Image (cartoon, one colour):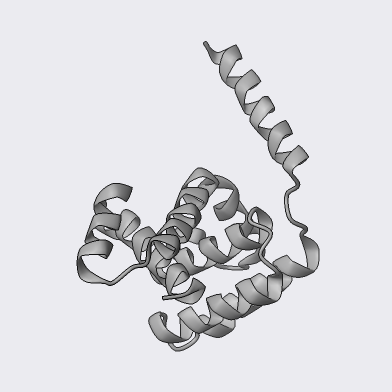
Length: 154
């Protein structure tokens, strides 16, 4: 199993979380019971899922800002989760845009609808032209801001 399969596993877990309403641990347990996963690939898939879940609001806002005439909730669940995963890789994980886009388009061809791959390619290409990875300093600043805002609410 390689990074591609790890991404597919992560997408399947994200789909289960949303559609099946299961928790992360149950989704990963199901994955381990039904598929052969190497520890390092499972670890990478878990990293991706945790990152998407942690940054879900920002990822969905990004999708919404680039998907004209389509609300995020109206997108097919598979397409929505492929986009979330690829955007997490591009924005937060430092995965080169070309790799993240290519993997997302391939997943869309396998799991999505007839027009999914073109739609996903369009969104991700537009994002890649206008975004840069979030630096560690930006992540620290965002975390500090969130902590400060949460302290004010207490």
